[in-house]
Image 1 (cartoon, rainbow, N blue to C red):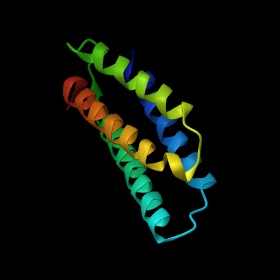
Image 2 (cartoon, rainbow, N blue to C red):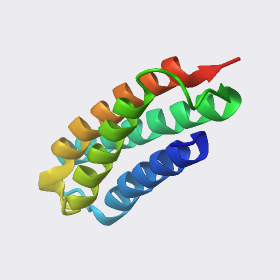
Image 3 (spheres, rainbow, N blue to C red):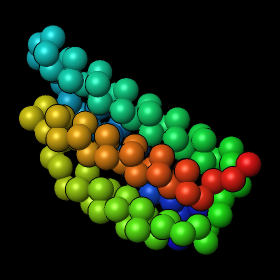
Image 4 (spheres, one colour):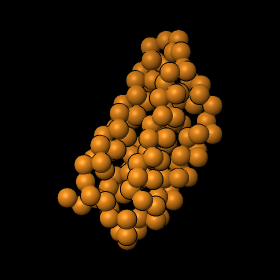
Length: 112
């Protein structure tokens, strides 16, 4: 997978989180806090995207394929979620995993 394809995957994940954020209407402070946490995770993904864009990308890096595969599976899980307040915590957990994998990809494949 090329750096562009990885970025597109991350853009898709960020868009899925944004769609969820837009569609959910919190009814109380607890739900608003959950939604704010989800927004922070979306913004963290944006930060990793920006870091990948700023670096040269080594598509032949060892271990990259496994991380890319994990990223694709997380994208599938995220896309399968219904965009409801009841799934926000699950979306946050998936976003945390996406961030970890994306940071691993950055560490493996991005060079100055």
